[in-house]
Image (cartoon, rainbow, N blue to C red):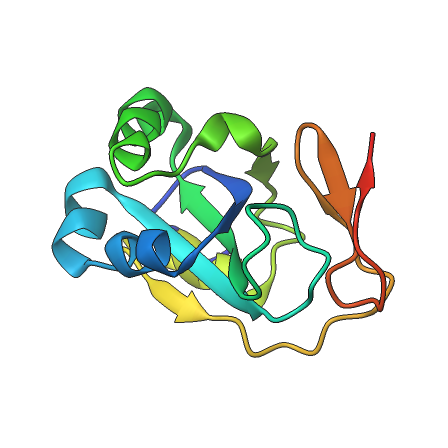
Amino acid sequence: RAAWARDELERCVLFARKPEVMKLQDDEYMKCHDYSVLACSLETPGVPGDGAPLGYLLWVYFEGRNLERLRMALKTIGLNLDEGIIERVDSKTSSLFEQELFLSKEPIFRWDEAVHSPSEEIRFKDYSFHPWADSGGEKK
């Protein structure tokens, strides 16, 4: 096992519009509140939100001990961690991006360039959908 800079990581997927994403990727804000982000642009009409044609999926990564502080900080820019499902990231089965986060103490913002499966499901607390499929989401 590599020498990890972080012992543990949590992640929460959120849906956002452009103004929140612009604020979220500010380097100083990221350093101050110690989080990283993998962001994916969505141009699919069936996504949750206010009906605007473009939105973003955000995977927000942080150390669990910072949860409450980060929850308050993100609320000030219009994002609510309570809308997503917080999951622990397993270092043994993590993606390459997540492994990079375990190795770095510095926050990272990256645009997701991966090709996603049409069957890939994104789950929120009260909503799930397949953003890379032709149809929109389904209420639970």
